[in-house]
Each structure stands twice: as C-alpha cells, then as structure tokens.
Image 1 (cartoon, one colour):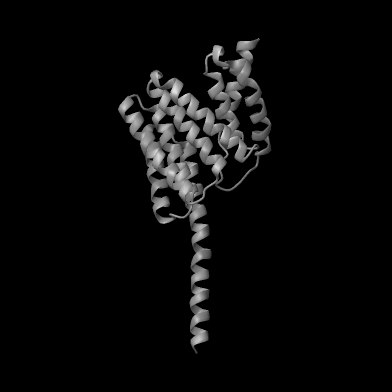
Image 2 (spheres, rainbow, N blue to C red):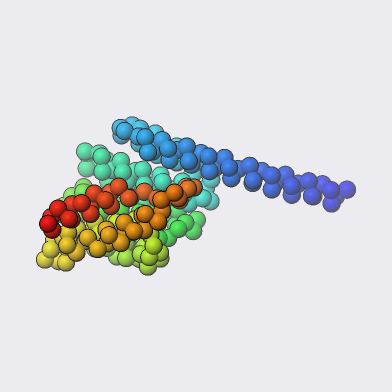
Length: 215
C-alpha cells in the first residue's frame, strides 16, 4: 500500500512539473510578443512587470531575469531623466546578478552586462572611459564563452565604433565585428523558443553606418 501511495505521489510531482513547463514557455513567449509590439515607455514598463512576475514564480529559470534586465536597459535608453536612467539600470543589474546565480547562459548574460555598461555611458559622457573599458572586458568574455553569440559581437562592435579613433576605435575597426555578427544572426533565422535572438536589425544599421562613413 505504501509503495502505491509513494508511486502516486511521484507521478503527481512529475505531472505538475510537466504542466508547469508549457505554462512557463507560454507566459514567456506571450510576454516576448508584447515586448516586440511595445511602442511607449508605459508599454515597456508593463512588459518589465510581467517578466518580473514570471521570475518570481519561476525563480530557478534565468530567462525571466534576463528579459527583465533587457527590458529595463531598453527603457533606460528611452528615459530622458538621468537619475531615472540610472535607477532603471540598477534594477537591471539586480536581475542580471540573479540570472547568473541560477547558472544562466554566461555568454548571453555577459553580453547583456556589456549592454548595461553602455547604458551607463549615455547617462554621462564623463563615464565614457571607465564604462567603455568595463564593457570591452565583459564583452570579450562573452565572446570567449560562446564565439557564435552574435549579440556579443554586435555590442563589442558598438563599443569599438564609439571609441575614439586615436584609441583604436571608429567605424573601420568596428565593421569586421558587425560583419561577423551578421553571419551569425543569419544562422539564427527560424530560431524558436525563448532564448535571446535580438540584435539583427541593430547590427544591420551599424553595418550601413560603417559603410557610409568609409565610402
């Protein structure tokens, strides 16, 4: 009798776990769709709140933390008030830290950290040297973790692009990174699921900007 009860309990736990996974995937995909269609800061804030709720429920999953951070970083670039920009980036930082704590994809999270550092620069140009160096280091680590991560190469290219030419930056030196990223973005075409796959449009814009400057 005890064996029957134990077996039933195990099956119940397994059934619950199997049911939760589709619910998690569905909630994430639905929220990602809302992110893609967001037009205003309020829309993005609503998306960030949804990712935060998913992260609270699925605290062992790294993806909700990742996208919560990503959404807040994007919000910071749209925000006009510098104090609010920093506050949004502070929120994003906490989510990146949590995603790393649950053993999230290091390459993607290091790349996102580099993006956050770039966000710090847009708050104040005086931070340029400090945070550009930090971004460069963490983005290099992102590439080492996964040389086929196009987002790491895109952001690394952006870091080079906005670095003064006298320090090895500029469009000419950045273009190879964008071109390498382009090939990798093309390999992601048709990619499904909730893994990060943003960046192809931004990468194309950077290639166009580099070609225009070097023509």
